[in-house]
Length: 266
Image 1 (cartoon, one colour):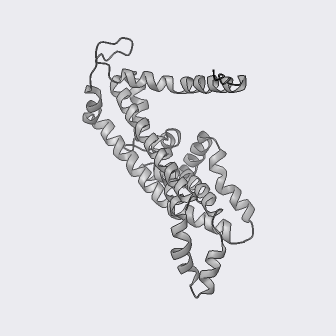
Image 2 (image 1 turned 45 degrees about the horizontal axis):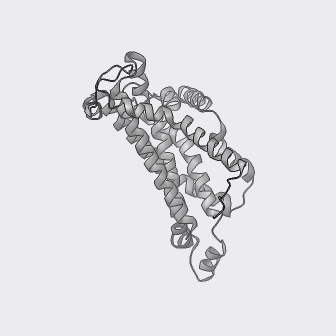
Image 3 (image 1 turned 135 degrees about the vertical axis):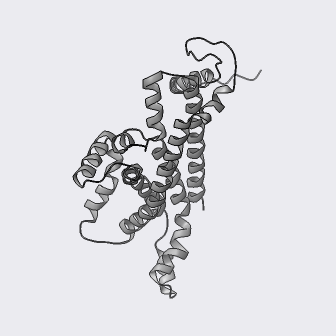
């Protein structure tokens, strides 16, 4: 009789730890998903299954307008950050200039500074220059942290690219701009795309910075959800919207990871 394979105690412990960790992290999401199909508007009781709430939030003019605002802010912030973040990463990696280390640290600072500090600082800046709060001020504020995330992702991709390829292009008669556009940029593209997708998720989900820098009529989706919760409490309509946001964010994050992994294996 073949002897049974014994699982080491340490592996058993790791398995149970993983199960408990995933259960702890995703139980609230599972509960949220279940009650998004609840026919009753009350979250305290289950009265039946329905798809009603998934279509009802699209008929809400406030949520629909705030979703459009969030998409506009995120697309503009990510587009600007893609250009500036790529140029920043290339400049920090390929060129030397006075104060380079200080500038590198300042570029990554939004990643470690609390959102509330960035929000207050940005608000004070807008007030100091007398710039009226609007959808444009939210875009400017979002560019600050989106730029940092794009720069970090592109820099990690850039670190794996051999600089001799650009040097060879220059030796063969290419100008610095041609070497960048035809040699470096195609190799950076996976990092740029994954960085933009990550920044898009963060911009769509941001509440604190948008709340401080929003003006009249420039409500984003997280702010609209917060206002609805504060005024009417938790409703299945918001549950359904939250589930869709989770699915969309997870899908974009998965695509970003696939693109990033594909770029590293090239």
